[in-house]
Image (cartoon, rainbow, N blue to C red; front, side, top):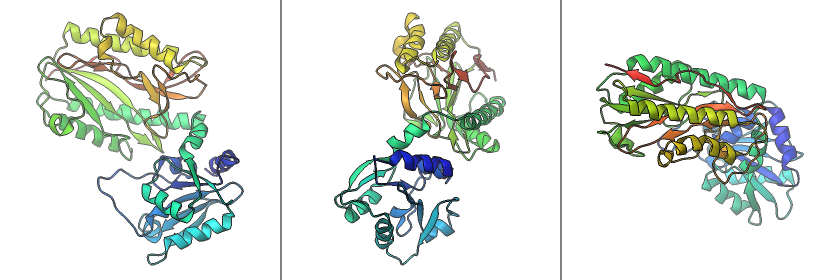
Length: 380
């Protein structure tokens, strides 16, 4: 992790005089190994928590500033090579940060790089202390470093995929006619935890669609109550976390014996994904990969059902740039990672999706999960 911080400090040279990377962000997890926690619904505040995070400047030892409650009850500490400064419960956070800034000898109009996921509260306090500062994105600078995944990161992602797929394998025997959508989601989340995942990398989602079962996008409080009864296709979208890496995975299950139309729609999605994986090679562009996979579904007359991009960059976040979509001309390089996730979504018909994480290679993509390519069937 210290190597990542040193690389980031070198990258900051000439671009920013100081970077503030808050605790609880992907940026700090990647840089210093300070893990994000399981997401929570409400906000838990500690006095002075606007300063908690890493303060990184070129040519200076990085500092991790934490309120006492975060350091003690949150069990947080500084990694090797990073100085820890703890704010007491009755101490003035502005004074701690002012002392820190004074030691850095910033120019009169400093450039401050700040994580895109910092709270506005942090920025407001920094503006008060540095009214002439110019703020830039630390996340954008750091993404240059995160873009190409190392062999170690790819191995971690492969393990995240193994855990994700193992959770899905454990779910399948538990699927039954009449269970609710929430029953299936809760079981899948539990199975991911049984695989030693801290939790899902995003809200586990399923799409329950059929001629008598309209597609309900973004209406979980309504759709989760629905019972799953044949004939429907159920599309799963979920992923397990592992050591900071975020998996994203999708498969389709037929409740009841699938019709010829279900089989056809699913086969088209699988064919489109295989086309996209083969095209994910060094030197291609993001938009060319999307176009080749999309053409499979367009040629079958179902292009209107493919409503989204083919995929997205992935790694320490579930969605990272660049994106496999029209208009993204990024040239692919060895070691980039993307999802390949074609789908056909039909409001009052059978739908299908599949999704795997794939690494860009010279001769085409290397997929990190291989199982359950067939249309799966629940028959009771």
